[in-house]
Image 1: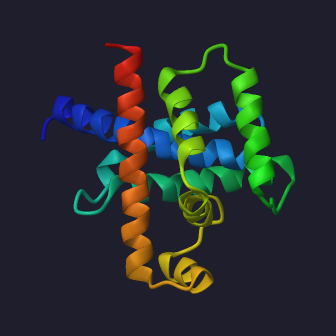
Image 2: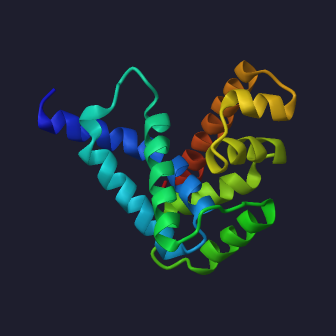
Length: 174
């Protein structure tokens, strides 16, 4: 694969994954501009390290692994070791993002709207995996399910989010 093809492949994968990464970062970091900076640093690191990516694995998993490390680095730099996220805090974060609409992307706006439309159980699964960093087995134990069904449900939720985002963007930009 030549350099142009690699760049194109990375761009395609990043555009598909960016809503998930942004959701994770914006749910983890309350400051809008700080979260934007962290998302940009993650994108740059992913692009720089794209040769390390195993194409047989899901890109979103690899990207979230790096994102989690960058969020931890952010809090270490801030001198905070532990942050607890609640539905109320996530709601306040969404309100803050809505109030700071200058410079926001249509994709991010669509993501926020689609996250709000999710059933509470689906939102909780996303929070457990992407905010709290729990494994499918840990989520299964907490929710009284199996790890296989948790993985299937998370896959369906991510697919529903991606479809919702694309639908909203298509309506805004016919």
